[in-house]
Amino acid sequence: MSEMQNKAQGEGRILDRIFVRNLVLPIAIGVYDEEQGVTQKVGFTIEAEVAAGVSPKGDNIEEVPSYDDLANAVKNIVAAGHINLVETLAARIAERCLADKRIVRVLVRIEKLERGPDAVGVEIVRSRPT
Image 1 (cartoon, one colour):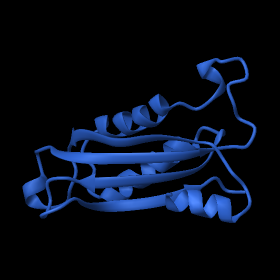
Image 2 (tube, rainbow, N blue to C red):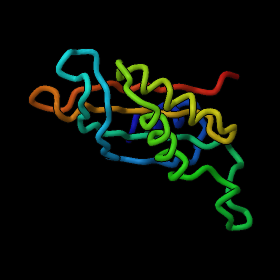
Image 3 (cartoon, one colour):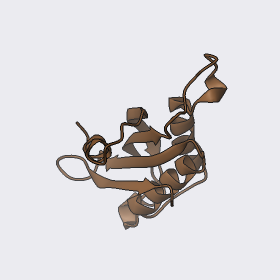
């Protein structure tokens, strides 16, 4: 069970979630000299909690946020060009996801897959201001 699931259930509410896991893209990211002018493989996991009552009542995609929306948020942000910090990238993705009023909380995990012996990165959780 993810941290978001534990917290939501601990607060007495159960929210639906949509997610994208293990999306890997070659992107331009990093502050070090060896990271300039090259791309590196970066893994993304996004989990978004959907506001209570949001459901596809008419079985139409327009009625709910979609995992395609999450993946496209990542792709559009990284397509804009080089980003120095993984933290900046994570914050931009979270902000883009929360722009959809139907999403109330989002977890963004970013892993640089070509740095160090294992993946390194950041994970952030952001909520819609109440």
